[in-house]
Each structure stands twice: as structure tokens, then as C-alpha cells.
Amino acid sequence: MAKRTKKIKEQRAGPFHATREHHSAEIAEDYTELIYELIESRGEARIRDLAEQLGVSHVTALRAVRRLQKEGYLTKVPRKPILLTAKGRRLALFARSRHALLVEFLQTLGVTKKQAEIDAEGAEHHLSRETLRCIRRSLGKKSKA
Image (cartoon, rainbow, N blue to C red; front, top):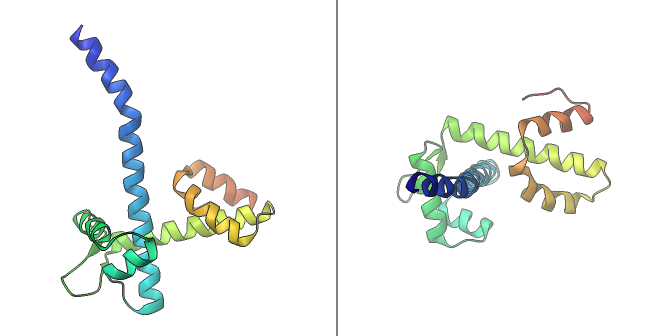
């Protein structure tokens, strides 16, 4: 009976675990993309900028940055700007290009640019590589994935 109970718990927990992993990946993409954009536009990215731009507390932004540093996406020294590693830069550029692709696709459907930007921000993290390939193909672009 214990084996059956354990199996049922694992089956139930599986989707929740996957959702948490996807959420963690979304945060990494959003933060690295924003850090990249801040460095491009302002020359640097700081915790306060991330908190302000993402609408989160300073503590929340700091915790996310610490996690991303542990995962090798960025480097952060106290009282210094945040720097992306090569891994972080790759993720930021991927997230940025995927976002632009989805905005362009939504606009071809007749969605306004403003609404396409809003919709893409939520949907972009949930698109498979297959879906991205199909969108690229429908827009007449070469497939990258």
C-alpha cells in the first residue's frame, strides 16, 4: 500500500514541480533580458533599477540576482553594477529575439503593437521550440531552433 501512495504523490507532485521549474526559468529570462537592456541603454544595471522596472521590492530583486549569480548567469559585487556572464548574455539575447518574434507574429494577426508587447510578455515563456520554428516559418524567416 505504501508504494501505491508514494506513486500517487509523485504523479500529483510532478506537474507542480514542472511549473516551479518553468517559473524559475521565466525569472532568469526576464532578469537577464532586463539587465542586458539596462546595460545597453544606461551603461549599467543595478538592483534598484531591476526592482523599479519589474515592480518588485529591492529584497525580491536582490534574491533573484543572488540565485542567478549562483546559476552562473551574472556577477554581482556589492556596490557595483551587475554584469552578465556569457551564459547570461546568451539567455538574454535568446529571450529578446523570441519576444520580438512573437510581437511580430501577433501583429501579423492584427494585434496592435502595444497589445502584442503585453501579450508576448506573458506567452513567450511558454512556447516550445517547435512552435517557435513554426512561427518563424510562417513569417518567412530561417529557423534557428
